[in-house]
Length: 223
Image: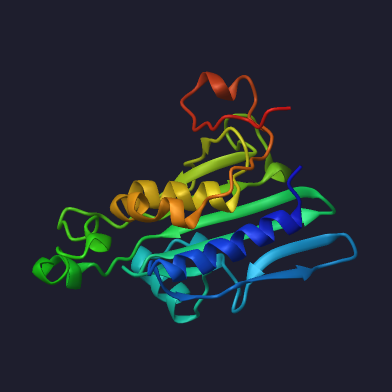
């Protein structure tokens, strides 16, 4: 069964591996903090108020505020920001927030692609038709409403009612593998074995009714 120590170790290892393979340009290593006698939070140094990411302001302003305050676990080589936040009560997962803020400043790569096209790491970001879109996976069972607010859900962009059901909470390895596979595909194929993603998974939290609509799913762990 996954617990706070497993998840903390996974975030720490992933951070080190992304540095090692050259995908992280800046980073804050994870911290494990006791919020009360039985509540633990996995966060990072410089973690501060994240409400800016939920406000009705331009995406570039949200990105700039997070970047200026170094409010992230990982800043990728193209400027994208990654956040990995978990909260546990004892060994029980209470919530998570896993966010990917793609950089709105890719012009330097796209306007001079000849400087980067020979470096395979940059192969997925030099096209001019790329649009910066934030992605967030939340596990928030306290606010559960079937279909309308699934326990675990994916939000695309800043659409406040975009909550696509997800079959279960995500581990750091599953989330980072998803980000690399879809947005840094060349780097994923180059470095996935070296990064060595953890294959542990959380149990399913999706309801039967939610499985009847379009949703994201990953195979549950064997019992």
